[in-house]
Length: 184
Image (cartoon, rainbow, N blue to C red; front, side, top):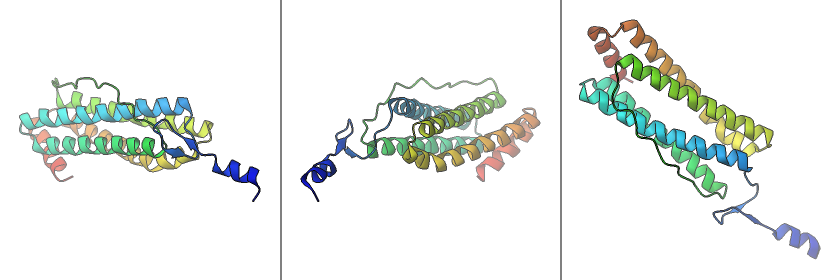
């Protein structure tokens, strides 16, 4: 191997964290990943708050469901931070909004949750589109299972919203939905 080829081969790029990287993340994609990370963290805190709201009303099925969702959103946030670190980036944690802690009805709470999931899905789709546009295949591969999981989650919230809407907030029907969620 020639000296010139050896010098070219030994050039290594380092990300902002100082970690060696073979392919840098485009700035627009990086900004959007950080925004999505904040959305995941906000969902974590909001679902935890919702879990407490249900627990205060002795609806333990709803409470455990939302506690699990809170943990899932935190796990998603971890995945994004691990990915950023693996790509040589610093993780920029933005300030989180205070969660909503009072609700007029269970249906309002579930509808809010469904919209939060829909917003997360849209955000992931935007990340996917940006990564395709910038030919960042690594990010597409990273996002594939997350997008699939997100679509399932959005569908699950639509299903629960349908059950709660159908119940008309009838206490007996809500207890049946609560029992259903306790088995999930």
